[in-house]
Length: 237
Figure 1 (tube, rainbow, N blue to C red):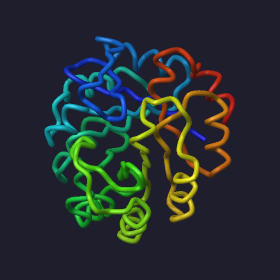
Figure 2: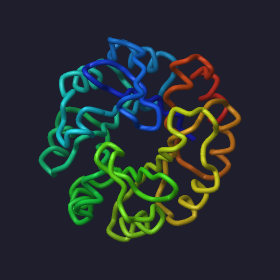
Figure 3: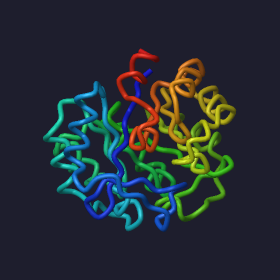
Figure 4: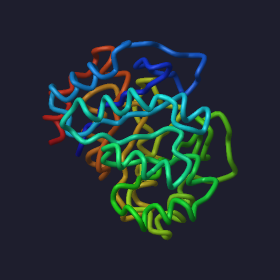
Protein backbone atom coordinates (compact mmCIF):
# COMPACT_ATOMS: atom_id res chain seq x y z
CA UNK A 1 0.00 0.00 0.00
CA UNK A 2 1.24 3.47 -0.88
CA UNK A 3 1.55 6.10 1.87
CA UNK A 4 0.96 9.47 0.21
CA UNK A 5 1.87 12.71 2.01
CA UNK A 6 -0.56 15.57 1.45
CA UNK A 7 0.42 19.16 0.80
CA UNK A 8 -2.62 21.42 1.10
CA UNK A 9 -2.08 24.92 -0.27
CA UNK A 10 -3.75 28.13 0.81
CA UNK A 11 -2.38 31.58 0.02
CA UNK A 12 0.83 29.89 -1.11
CA UNK A 13 1.41 28.20 2.25
CA UNK A 14 1.25 24.59 3.38
CA UNK A 15 -1.73 24.32 5.72
CA UNK A 16 -4.18 21.86 7.24
CA UNK A 17 -7.89 22.53 7.67
CA UNK A 18 -9.85 20.74 10.37
CA UNK A 19 -12.71 18.80 8.73
CA UNK A 20 -12.29 20.99 5.66
CA UNK A 21 -13.29 24.14 7.55
CA UNK A 22 -11.54 27.18 6.08
CA UNK A 23 -11.98 28.99 9.40
CA UNK A 24 -10.01 26.27 11.24
CA UNK A 25 -6.65 26.51 9.54
CA UNK A 26 -3.18 25.67 10.81
CA UNK A 27 -0.19 26.87 8.80
CA UNK A 28 2.71 24.41 8.85
CA UNK A 29 5.08 25.98 6.36
CA UNK A 30 5.42 29.03 4.16
CA UNK A 31 7.62 26.96 1.82
CA UNK A 32 5.55 24.13 0.32
CA UNK A 33 8.30 23.29 -2.17
CA UNK A 34 10.73 22.57 0.64
CA UNK A 35 8.04 20.48 2.33
CA UNK A 36 7.65 18.43 -0.84
CA UNK A 37 11.41 17.93 -0.94
CA UNK A 38 11.30 16.73 2.65
CA UNK A 39 8.66 14.09 1.94
CA UNK A 40 10.49 12.99 -1.19
CA UNK A 41 13.70 12.70 0.82
CA UNK A 42 11.94 10.53 3.39
CA UNK A 43 10.86 8.05 0.76
CA UNK A 44 7.50 9.22 -0.56
CA UNK A 45 6.65 7.48 -3.83
CA UNK A 46 3.88 9.98 -4.62
CA UNK A 47 2.78 13.38 -3.31
CA UNK A 48 -0.80 14.62 -3.09
CA UNK A 49 -1.13 18.38 -3.67
CA UNK A 50 -4.43 20.18 -3.09
CA UNK A 51 -5.14 23.78 -4.09
CA UNK A 52 -7.59 24.67 -1.32
CA UNK A 53 -8.16 28.15 -2.72
CA UNK A 54 -8.92 26.56 -6.07
CA UNK A 55 -11.34 24.07 -4.54
CA UNK A 56 -13.20 26.95 -2.90
CA UNK A 57 -13.22 29.27 -5.93
CA UNK A 58 -13.67 26.70 -8.68
CA UNK A 59 -10.49 27.49 -10.59
CA UNK A 60 -6.77 26.89 -10.02
CA UNK A 61 -5.29 29.58 -7.78
CA UNK A 62 -1.94 28.31 -6.47
CA UNK A 63 -0.70 27.34 -9.95
CA UNK A 64 2.83 28.64 -9.57
CA UNK A 65 3.43 26.84 -6.29
CA UNK A 66 2.07 23.57 -7.66
CA UNK A 67 4.29 23.88 -10.74
CA UNK A 68 7.34 24.48 -8.57
CA UNK A 69 6.53 21.40 -6.49
CA UNK A 70 6.18 19.27 -9.62
CA UNK A 71 9.52 20.56 -10.91
CA UNK A 72 11.31 20.17 -7.58
CA UNK A 73 10.70 16.52 -6.73
CA UNK A 74 11.21 13.17 -8.39
CA UNK A 75 8.13 11.33 -7.05
CA UNK A 76 5.00 11.76 -9.17
CA UNK A 77 2.59 14.46 -8.03
CA UNK A 78 -1.18 14.17 -8.13
CA UNK A 79 -3.02 17.49 -8.23
CA UNK A 80 -6.48 18.37 -6.89
CA UNK A 81 -8.51 21.49 -6.24
CA UNK A 82 -10.40 23.72 -8.64
CA UNK A 83 -10.05 21.48 -11.69
CA UNK A 84 -13.38 21.91 -13.43
CA UNK A 85 -12.74 21.56 -17.18
CA UNK A 86 -11.06 19.28 -19.70
CA UNK A 87 -8.74 22.15 -20.60
CA UNK A 88 -7.67 22.52 -16.97
CA UNK A 89 -6.94 18.80 -16.81
CA UNK A 90 -4.83 19.01 -19.97
CA UNK A 91 -2.94 22.00 -18.60
CA UNK A 92 -1.95 20.15 -15.43
CA UNK A 93 -0.91 17.05 -17.34
CA UNK A 94 1.15 19.18 -19.71
CA UNK A 95 2.72 20.88 -16.68
CA UNK A 96 3.94 17.53 -15.40
CA UNK A 97 1.28 16.32 -12.98
CA UNK A 98 1.16 12.53 -12.97
CA UNK A 99 -2.53 12.42 -12.05
CA UNK A 100 -5.33 14.96 -11.94
CA UNK A 101 -8.07 14.57 -9.35
CA UNK A 102 -11.64 15.68 -10.00
CA UNK A 103 -14.11 16.35 -7.21
CA UNK A 104 -16.88 18.88 -7.72
CA UNK A 105 -16.52 18.64 -11.51
CA UNK A 106 -17.31 14.92 -11.46
CA UNK A 107 -20.45 15.55 -9.41
CA UNK A 108 -21.66 18.41 -11.59
CA UNK A 109 -20.84 16.65 -14.87
CA UNK A 110 -20.15 12.90 -14.62
CA UNK A 111 -19.91 12.67 -18.40
CA UNK A 112 -17.02 15.14 -18.35
CA UNK A 113 -15.21 12.89 -15.88
CA UNK A 114 -15.91 9.94 -18.16
CA UNK A 115 -14.54 11.84 -21.16
CA UNK A 116 -11.44 12.77 -19.18
CA UNK A 117 -10.92 9.09 -18.38
CA UNK A 118 -11.34 8.18 -22.04
CA UNK A 119 -8.74 10.75 -23.04
CA UNK A 120 -6.23 10.27 -20.27
CA UNK A 121 -6.87 6.82 -18.81
CA UNK A 122 -5.15 6.02 -15.52
CA UNK A 123 -4.07 9.63 -15.01
CA UNK A 124 -7.61 10.62 -14.00
CA UNK A 125 -8.86 10.13 -10.45
CA UNK A 126 -12.21 11.09 -8.93
CA UNK A 127 -12.26 12.09 -5.28
CA UNK A 128 -15.47 11.23 -3.47
CA UNK A 129 -15.59 13.41 -0.37
CA UNK A 130 -18.38 12.62 2.06
CA UNK A 131 -19.91 13.36 5.44
CA UNK A 132 -21.93 10.49 6.83
CA UNK A 133 -21.79 8.79 3.45
CA UNK A 134 -23.23 11.84 1.62
CA UNK A 135 -21.08 13.52 -1.03
CA UNK A 136 -19.99 17.14 -0.49
CA UNK A 137 -18.68 19.57 -3.13
CA UNK A 138 -17.32 23.12 -3.60
CA UNK A 139 -14.44 22.72 -1.18
CA UNK A 140 -16.68 20.52 1.02
CA UNK A 141 -18.94 23.48 1.81
CA UNK A 142 -22.02 22.18 -0.03
CA UNK A 143 -23.77 18.89 0.63
CA UNK A 144 -25.41 17.02 -2.23
CA UNK A 145 -28.10 14.34 -2.28
CA UNK A 146 -25.65 11.75 -3.58
CA UNK A 147 -24.71 8.67 -1.60
CA UNK A 148 -20.99 8.01 -1.81
CA UNK A 149 -21.26 4.30 -2.62
CA UNK A 150 -23.79 4.64 -5.42
CA UNK A 151 -21.94 7.62 -6.88
CA UNK A 152 -18.71 5.62 -6.95
CA UNK A 153 -20.47 2.76 -8.71
CA UNK A 154 -21.95 5.13 -11.28
CA UNK A 155 -18.59 6.68 -12.10
CA UNK A 156 -16.90 3.28 -12.24
CA UNK A 157 -19.53 2.19 -14.77
CA UNK A 158 -18.64 5.28 -16.83
CA UNK A 159 -15.01 4.23 -16.93
CA UNK A 160 -13.35 6.26 -14.18
CA UNK A 161 -10.26 4.19 -13.36
CA UNK A 162 -9.38 5.19 -9.79
CA UNK A 163 -10.93 6.87 -6.76
CA UNK A 164 -10.01 8.72 -3.60
CA UNK A 165 -12.47 8.42 -0.73
CA UNK A 166 -12.23 11.16 1.88
CA UNK A 167 -14.22 10.96 5.09
CA UNK A 168 -14.62 14.66 5.86
CA UNK A 169 -15.63 14.14 9.48
CA UNK A 170 -12.33 12.33 10.11
CA UNK A 171 -10.11 14.74 8.18
CA UNK A 172 -7.38 16.20 10.41
CA UNK A 173 -9.07 14.71 13.48
CA UNK A 174 -6.50 11.93 14.03
CA UNK A 175 -9.12 9.63 15.58
CA UNK A 176 -8.78 6.78 13.05
CA UNK A 177 -10.16 6.25 9.57
CA UNK A 178 -13.78 5.26 9.04
CA UNK A 179 -12.96 1.61 8.41
CA UNK A 180 -16.56 0.53 7.97
CA UNK A 181 -17.24 3.04 5.21
CA UNK A 182 -13.89 2.42 3.55
CA UNK A 183 -14.57 -1.31 3.48
CA UNK A 184 -17.96 -0.57 1.89
CA UNK A 185 -16.35 1.59 -0.77
CA UNK A 186 -13.62 -0.95 -1.53
CA UNK A 187 -16.27 -3.64 -1.88
CA UNK A 188 -18.37 -1.49 -4.21
CA UNK A 189 -15.88 -1.53 -7.09
CA UNK A 190 -12.94 -3.40 -8.52
CA UNK A 191 -11.25 -0.08 -9.29
CA UNK A 192 -8.38 0.95 -6.98
CA UNK A 193 -9.31 3.17 -4.04
CA UNK A 194 -7.14 5.54 -2.02
CA UNK A 195 -8.37 6.41 1.48
CA UNK A 196 -8.05 9.78 3.20
CA UNK A 197 -9.08 11.09 6.60
CA UNK A 198 -8.22 10.15 10.16
CA UNK A 199 -4.85 8.42 9.85
CA UNK A 200 -2.75 9.04 12.94
CA UNK A 201 -0.42 6.06 13.35
CA UNK A 202 1.06 2.95 11.78
CA UNK A 203 -1.72 0.74 13.14
CA UNK A 204 -4.28 2.76 11.20
CA UNK A 205 -2.25 2.23 8.04
CA UNK A 206 -1.88 -1.51 8.53
CA UNK A 207 -5.63 -1.85 9.05
CA UNK A 208 -6.28 0.11 5.88
CA UNK A 209 -3.85 -2.11 4.01
CA UNK A 210 -5.78 -5.19 5.12
CA UNK A 211 -8.99 -3.65 3.77
CA UNK A 212 -7.47 -3.59 0.31
CA UNK A 213 -7.01 0.10 -0.34
CA UNK A 214 -4.33 1.02 -2.86
CA UNK A 215 -3.03 3.93 -0.84
CA UNK A 216 -3.60 6.21 2.12
CA UNK A 217 -3.27 9.99 2.03
CA UNK A 218 -1.74 11.31 5.25
CA UNK A 219 -1.56 14.91 6.36
CA UNK A 220 -1.71 16.22 9.90
CA UNK A 221 -0.10 13.17 11.53
CA UNK A 222 3.05 13.81 9.49
CA UNK A 223 3.07 17.53 10.14
CA UNK A 224 2.65 17.32 13.90
CA UNK A 225 5.28 14.59 14.16
CA UNK A 226 3.21 11.73 15.53
CA UNK A 227 3.80 9.67 12.38
CA UNK A 228 7.22 9.12 10.84
CA UNK A 229 6.96 8.79 7.07
CA UNK A 230 9.83 6.32 6.73
CA UNK A 231 8.35 4.04 9.39
CA UNK A 232 4.88 4.34 7.87
CA UNK A 233 6.11 3.36 4.41
CA UNK A 234 8.09 0.41 5.79
CA UNK A 235 5.11 -0.87 7.77
CA UNK A 236 2.88 -1.35 4.72
CA UNK A 237 5.41 -1.91 1.95
